Length: 258
Image (tube, rainbow, N blue to C red):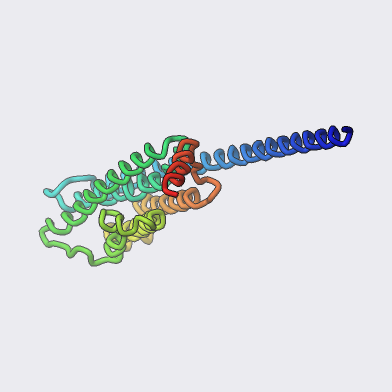
């Protein structure tokens, strides 16, 4: 009798220790998650600030130093839509699109998918207008300029972001392809900035006039922006955790299939 009571007492004591261990583990995990979320929020705020800075710099550069904006009646200034829309779409919006699932981790996955799709559709529209501006600025001049002759234009047409066919083919490599598109967009922006700076300033660029400063800072801004985006996109601790109903749905689907 005494042995049974002692065994019961030990079992209850062990069970209580196990509960305490589980609770301690949960608290530690919660603290780590809170720390990770604060770190994510801090870095993401820097991304937002750099995004606004990049848009402001490209607008100042094109509007005040490259002569402003026009359409086909003035091909030289129609081109200025190209860098503005490229930075806005392929850099700032696309970069934020890569982080939607991690930034809005508390939202339902279906809602995040819709928001991600809408963001990428807006990026696609801006990219089309940006490319049309570049092509028109070459084709409608008094003496037309050849298209697709520079390394900048070659890089642009390497990424498959605008083709639904490519996106279906590479669906299983979606994250990888999305990241490559983003990196190629950044490289393309850098080469495009340098190409336009040299064309507009020629040897004066060596003296670093205000237009050169603006263009250089624009290049630095989108570079740091891209580095921070890729950091948040690939660090495992920032990955979105499935919500309870999503896990239950996954279990139900698994059970129905098996």
